[in-house]
Amino acid sequence: MTSISIIVPVYNVEKYVEACLQSIMAQTYAGPVECILVDDCGKDDSIDIAERMIAGYEGTIRFRVLHHPHNRGLSAARNTGVEAASGDYLLFVDSDDELTPDCIELLEKPLAEASFDLVVGDTATIGNDDLHEYLRLKLDDGTVLRSADIISHYRTEWNMMAQAKLLKTSFIRQNHLLFKEGIIHEDELWCFQVACTAKSLRIVNHPVYRYMIREQSITADSNKNLWKKIAAKVTIVGEMARFLKSRKLFSPPAYAIIQIFTEEILHYEKVDRQQFRKTYLKLRKEAQFPFLYRIRANMWNFRACMKELHYFMPATLGERYKYWRISR
Image (cartoon, rainbow, N blue to C red):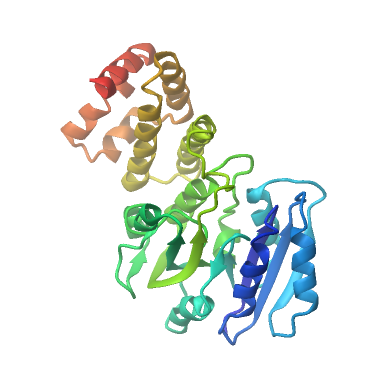
């Protein structure tokens, strides 16, 4: 049977880590499973609670605890887990969330039919119905996507989160798909890179993951974190563009996603004229594409090209034109 490596970063979740680990220990899957907990040096008793639970566990899952020498963040903790994993497939779990009891069993079952780069399950969002609708899969159970269709359906029909997915370990490693350290919303960049490089995806349209909305979570307070969120998304846009160019990937759907991110960022900024100018110029510098790439990516469509007319102007003129277009 397929061997699974569950990767769980642990940081300041003493109220929730017990429920998370109980949901892992309760898995119905009968195949080989290892669970790698990465201690990211929190300031509470999270890792002590986890180690006490592991010490008293008598099931078949093999638990391992890895310790960072100092706090490095969620991305680094996940990367540490990927490096240490021995399973055929990876499953990322946040330590304040939970798995459904049949999570691994449901996600692994399609692998009896064929090998897929990733198997994507649905998510039950606890505490925010609007977010649940946003993350909900829009594809039928059993749907198989291949190559270009994967990125074409990304973000609109399958979600931008690392969780609720089995990912083939060899695929992740061969494509050097590591999480970007030092930013929030790292899943949006990483899943974009996965979508651009994966050759096969299988949908399991059943809830396999319980995503808990906590008041203390990194992204919960949208006003407090607005500027941090904008800065992270600017970095993400730049990384997306560099990824396509460095991998020599021509992908109109991927290019369209970058433009959607750009539009979202600039709409945040339109209330502050000086901030808009600064962000626009940075975005333009971060996400440069050759003239012909932009034309081809828009399928030579005149209306689409006109929407991006500002890219073909000098930067200062393009900024004024774009601000006028957004503000009118």
